[in-house]
Length: 90
Image (cartoon, rainbow, N blue to C red; front, side):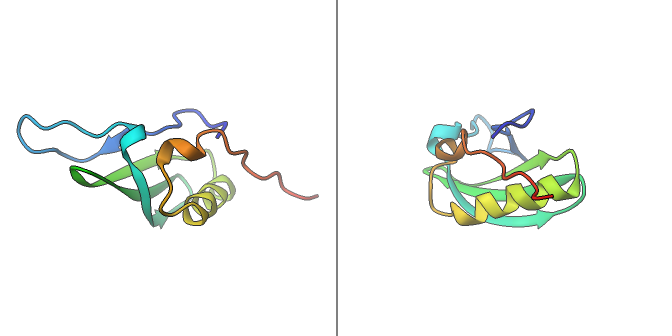
């Protein structure tokens, strides 16, 4: 996706000495929240569930990204890296 910061880094904490999975290791699980300024979604890796907090430039873009994530549930996070965000029809 042509957005600054894509692919987002995982948010939250890991166990002591643990590491976050890489984008190659994460499968998209669920969009948790969409707002004017971000999309929160979760993914699953061998080490468990991980949450992402991805900043958005506006609500319209946030809703489009959330739709892309929902439509690609169960696919690898890296697999959607080059998908285009649909343009608005004027």
